[in-house]
Image (cartoon, rainbow, N blue to C red; front, side):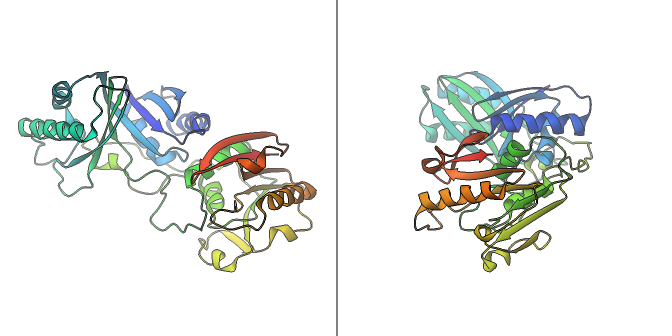
Length: 354
């Protein structure tokens, strides 16, 4: 069994665990794993190849780290020896690595000196343990080694992901106040759970760059991009297919009142121009999910009045259910079914459902 740490935005940890439990059981059938939530992520123990392939299937995490070593460490010479003794060529196919270092309440606090020691340890390791020529692949993107010190407890991890998992592809249009893809997937799971919605229409009436639409359409599909682990010496003999779409909406539609925004959205998405606040009637099976302007990047004359008017309009339309992001300063008086706190580009907000 290998130990992984799945990095997750603060507040979405339980949702990430729910996604992991569902997709792991569907993709890997009866394979054994153990997982538990801690602040900032999910700790996972499973066979190496399954942990690596989670990059291909999970939508909510930011990245997946393979934990290589954990032990007490209070000085640089010991750190040097620990790093030098790790069997790096078990995974690496190159010599060039970089380090991501953090220290909290530890005797070792100078990240520059830690990086210098780590670099020297890797140079010494490769001088004594050459990667076989047939396995060597120079010119690959630098592999990132994460070094964490907390109360003198050292954790060394290897990044399996590369670019953050919320970067789904190379061509992503992002609006003025766009929502990251992994947050959008988390909020969709929070609102919808794992249920059938074949009689329902999912609408984002302020779709902006279309993030909610794309994530709803692809939540059960594979992430079709490259990951760091694919450049490792470890060979993964698993072929995965998209899962059946459990949500199975009757339609997924996006509206926006700004034509210039709609012109940049993926043409495969169903969108049209419409000012949501002029909507008169809707199907009683409509599910709304939306990320309206907060009055920061997109200015509002009177944000408090705007959100009051918006919530009243939604309730007057009486949809099947709604999930909406509202700045915390305006959300406290909104009666809701549930709410989830998070930080959006430095703004304290809540995802509210009703």
